[in-house]
Length: 242
Image (spheres, rainbow, N blue to C red):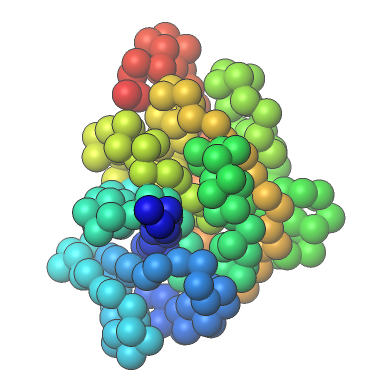
C-alpha cells in the first residue's frame, strides 16, 4: 500500500495586503504546500481581488475580527480540508516565505510538532532588517520571561511565520483564546501545555512601509497582555490554556 502523502496547507491571515501578497505568494516553493487559504479580515484595499487572481482560496470576514480571530478561521478551515500540517504565512512580505520547506521539514521528519521562524538569530541581523529598537528590546525581555516561566529555550515567541501539526491544533482549544495579537502567545502557551515539541529555524526579517506592524501603543498593550497571561500560568498552571 502506498504511503499517504502528508498534506501541508498554508494559511494567510490578511488585512490590507494587496501590495505585498503577490510577492509573498510567488516565493512559496512549489510542491511544498498542497494549497493556500487566505482569510481576509475586512480589508479596505484590493487584497481579495489580488488573491483571487492568483488562484488562492479566499474567505472573507464581513467585519474585522482581529488578528487572533482571523487565525481561528485560518486553522479551522485548514483542518476541515484535511491538513496534516498548517503553515501560517503573513502576506505582508515581512517574512521570507521561500523558507517554507525548511520550516516544515523538521515536522515531516517527526522531530518537532511546532516550528517557528525566528527573526532573532543575531541582534545585528534584526537591526539590519529594520526591526525598531524598542521592538527588539521588548522582544528580548518578553522572550526571556516566557522561557523562564514556560521552561523553554526559544530565541523568540513573537514570530508570525509558524507551522503546526494537526495533532497539536486539535488538542489546543484555540477558539477560546483572544481575538487580538496576544493570540500568538496564547496558542504557544497551549502548545507547551499539551507537551508539544517546539523547534525553530532562523529567518530574515524585512521591515518596510507596506509591511504590517503594530504601533507603540498596541505593542505596549500586547506586552502587558503577555505578562498577564504568564501570571495566569504561574497561578493556575497549564490547565488555564487547555
